[in-house]
Length: 229
Ligand code: 2DT
Ligand code: MG
Image 1 (cartoon, rainbow, N blue to C red):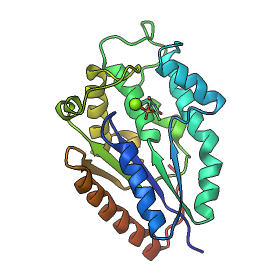
Image 2 (cartoon, helix red, strand yellow):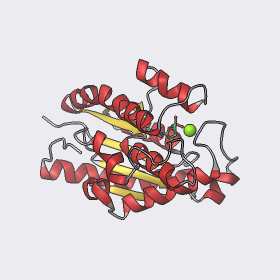
Image 3 (cartoon, protein in one colour):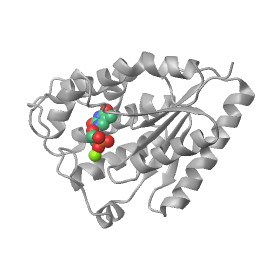
């Protein structure tokens, strides 16, 4: 029996991940596929509520602790993702562990972090990657890349913790390094496609669709099973 595919949207705030991921779900459903859409962080679980409070600035957490909570928030969904894929339901994710890696590692590149000095552990790329090793591996990751200028033209950012230009700049840099194959994350990344999210909505949608179709055909042709990261 065919299995579902795991498709991930990644990128900066304002890059259009939410709209594009929902459009893809509609398109796949119109084609007769079963699809589950999820987003991370999933703020509805007990762990997700801790993350939500942190992002809104209502609570503080050590950088390592919040990183592990974001990862735990994915692990608590891991068996759900696996069982949907096995039941031939495609799972479309709005953010996954690449955001986890990019946002936490980006903090280490900022001049000041919340960690005391000397920090108990530097937030290296590989340290940031390890808690997520073993999660269901995406068949395709679409990295919606946007310049900071274009993000500003789209109305700038909201008021959450990471929605600041300096942080977004670092996050974009780290996504780019992973895309280039750096570190355990880059080596394990599999299909990691950069899409220019500065183009129009329809153009981006078309590029997403072509990549999804290519991935779909190769998974079916080669009979690839669900992988682990
Ligand atoms: P949204 O704006 O998409 O709700 O994301 N983040 C996300 C992390 O720092 N680590 C993670 O593992 C994930 C999934 C990105 C809220 C913010 O949380 C950041 C933006
Ligand atoms: Mg956001």
